[in-house]
Image (tube, rainbow, N blue to C red):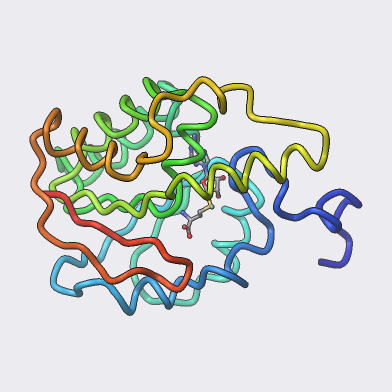
Length: 200
Ligand SMILES: C[S@@+](CC[C@H](N)C(=O)[O-])C[C@H]1O[C@@H](n2cnc3c(N)ncnc32)[C@H](O)[C@@H]1O
């Protein structure tokens, strides 16, 4: 972490969008991949994230031979969301075979409220045959808020959220009851105690 600004060096967990500089030291990608059912896997990947530095690093570190296109975009911004549509159009597809949301629901929720998270889930369902979700449970929200407080900041929507202690169940209920998805797979918990669910 040489060369990082002082605050990131001392408090790498105090971030607004979950864009931790040291994330994979704790939540390794291999841990997740080992738990996933390979028969649902696709070979063209569109990898998106809000943070330009993380996208640059992912591009530089990528050494797998799968066709991956990286894009820095905010999935909550209409103008950026249309870029996802453009990617599909390029391959003459209406939907992705699978869309993966690993550890992102909480950041959308904390920054865009319950309605923003619902909109996020709705949009992703409209773009995917299979939606893969690893949602953060409430304890993660409390940790994120605590870390922000340590640097005299906070998530202004934190106290206002209606989906709270049972947020993972609320997300699942919304996907199945409102968006008519069916849960077809639930993994064992990752080392960081989150399950990965597949919704068709
Ligand atoms: C905790 S990290 C998870 C990273 C990765 N998905 C994983 O699990 O390996 C959360 C990521 O969500 C990204 N993020 C937060 N809000 C976003 C948004 N509105 N659009 C795109 N990415 C977003 C952050 O930049 C951060 O990299």
